[in-house]
Length: 235
Ligand SMILES: [Zn+2]
Image (cartoon, rainbow, N blue to C red; front, side, top):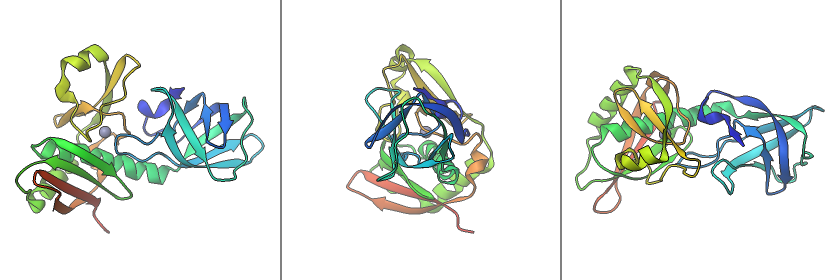
């Protein structure tokens, strides 16, 4: 399966052919739907058929292999025949919000000097957990993030080989998830001058697109764990 979101996070739709369809999921030969992973939720959206009918997709998950993506149809939705041509279209507003928060979490990762032990992206907000004995200054962290956002740094994916990745273990640092392996190459996400790490998610092209954010909470979750919650600034 061709994963179009890996090289173009801004692709909202694509033409595709159905290769398998069951109530458990629909598989296409190519897709713009991001499957849940690395703390980022799976995309929702719709598959449009040539006859004008549409199948609602409520979630997207990883399948068996590294490039297998399963589109989960709404309960009771009709299934397309194998071989059918469809237009796969994501819920762009929801995805774009995920891209903005996700990119912001990379900035947070760069702004805090400590190992990341977990993370989650949600609607309009996201969080990272850091292994840190001391607390963090909420206001100072918010200022640092908004400065990095206002500086409008370019953000771009690039690929390295598994061997290059193994030689630089420091590139794995977010969300305590190892990046997808098994295709011989690993995807890196670079925020120019700020952050470089392995990541398979979707991001905005410039940090300015994130918009103003607030650090809404710094929680103590265990002796060494500090949870930082960021959210889009209201209004
Ligand atoms: Zn990322």
